[in-house]
Image (cartoon, rainbow, N blue to C red; front, side, top):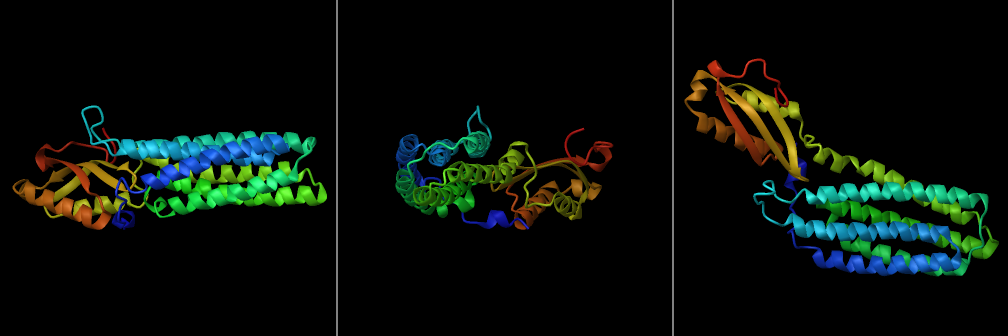
Length: 304
């Protein structure tokens, strides 16, 4: 069941150096693309630069988030700071959506009246961009399997690499055949791809921030397990959630039988061991109620 929880996790400091190299590479590239795009009159180059800029912003956010996430819990943040990575991923995807919509609008405007474009500048900068994108994707590849935030970055870079290939092809067509409409057409294509990526991925951080139950844990199976433990009569007020990515947690009220009430510690140990073994739920808060004094007509999930 809880297969996500079996992965070896990254040591928190691993990858900091790689992330900082990627930030510098993307920063220099973004500047080169904006300057080149203005000089060449190419919107697709500026589109790629904006996409790259969002990459760099994503990297900076990820870098800061990884540092903040390592702080231990304190009186202000009793759950710790791990969720900052999820917030960072949400900001990142939202930015991508805004950038994508703007580029589609700008692309259509240019379709109507295609400006003159210096194809050779587009091709040269496109090739440089492709190399930087490939480097960044390689740097983040091994890290992306364990973090929603780094995965957002990796997808950014992958889409950037494809965008750079499209820009190179577009620049070549402009050089060879003066096909100016290709530039805004490629821009719209890049923008649609950005939107597709962002909309398909944004659900994960939203679900975590909304305290949704972990996607790989079936709530009904957890309840069936709890009810099957010897000495347990029923459960209610069940809350299944994720403290941060890959960390499932459970709060619930457990109603015990008369006999079960005499052995609460054994029941608690049994429940916790089974939750960990079957669902990877390492954090659980259990409130026990005697069957004669149990909450009447209580909701299975939530409060009330």
